[in-house]
Amino acid sequence: MRSSNVQNGEISKNDCVFISNKVVNSDNVQIGDIIVVVRNGSRNLIGKHAQIKENMPNTVIGAFMTGIRSKDSNFINALLSTQLFENEINKNMGATINQITGYMFANMEFFIPQNEEQKKLGNLFLNIDNLITLHQYLYLYI
Image 1 (cartoon, helix red, strand yellow):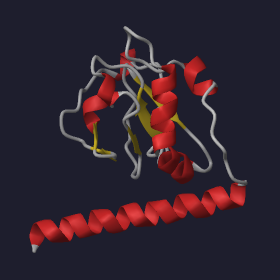
Image 2 (cartoon, helix red, strand yellow):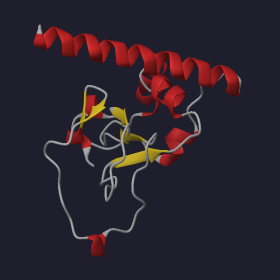
Image 3 (tube, helix red, strand yellow):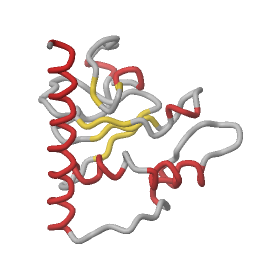
């Protein structure tokens, strides 16, 4: 997976890059993982993200990307879609290199509700995203 595989908050399987299993040294993605663009020539692409929603065997995260694995990934994915996340990116962005380092991620601050509320909010936003996708699909084919 690379930045071009993240389009409008979803995973696109167009433009995939295939490499030999012998050179892969990272874990395969899992359902619920969130991939985030952390380094790119275009500052506007930093923070672009998508959640893995289906089984994708033999798929790893490529260079200039990072993965987030959480028991409340629906909530985290929704959080990464907020202006709060954009503000944290802008606060930490360097002047010359467009990137978010692990250190920058670790120092981002958000008010986070308790676990049960995270699950409820994450599921609410997932359902809203699914409804939006359904309506867009219906609009295209009506």
